[in-house]
Length: 362
Image (cartoon, rainbow, N blue to C red; front, side, top):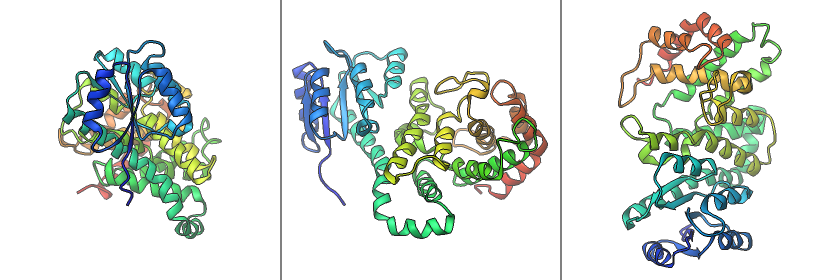
């Protein structure tokens, strides 16, 4: 195990703030500092990649939002946690920060306990994403064996990442398995319709099924206190939770780079991870896509995911009965869901019930 200290870059134009944060963090981490946005960009350009960045928002010259945007344009920094340091706490400020690639916010003044807890949480989350690349090297021989068994290296990547999702993000142990079965049922039924028959051949359906396992992989990067909260999220927490779609897409993209894979199953997995929370009427996230702008794979995944969420109990609510959950899905045709996919669901909803019973968490 590597016990080397993680490297943190602190960017702030106030010397007093830099001194305070340096004192808070120096015992556990290697610290680098920059007193302006320009200096931060230059340091990253010529130096090694930090493990985490604490970034002031309001600075003369290049502000924190612009610095974050430019950093995210660099492939090696795309997955580095960037925590904004700010005196601003409005929803609009947080929304802007998340849109340019920020990971979290700390409102000044920040005490040492909260700072250390946040830094630790985000470094641990980054470790899960980094592990995908590390496992690719250490399990090369095992991969060769599994390629023969599964038929392609994409299958191996999907299974490795899906198993990692279960270790942290999966609140219910059977969720991914049920979701894959629901996607299979919907895809097969939908393939009978003239509008989708050409798109849904056997190969494509198989890719959809495998890719469905990774729809929530972005949960890796969501802080534990939000991911495991025993109740409904407030608006700020939900804004952070919604970023799991983009984080999931980025994690799969990183796996593509690490494993030397382009196209195939992982392309579909990225579509599903990014867009399964979009809605037919354009009210979903992260990009507000509407209708057929949403990839077909993600539209199918949306129905499967919502049905499973409704019929599976949570800490803060009991499971919904199958008939009522089916009504919710059917009523969502044309608003939340693709009407043709809902039509397919209505024809096979009893098969959904059987899957839910067969693979129940109990």
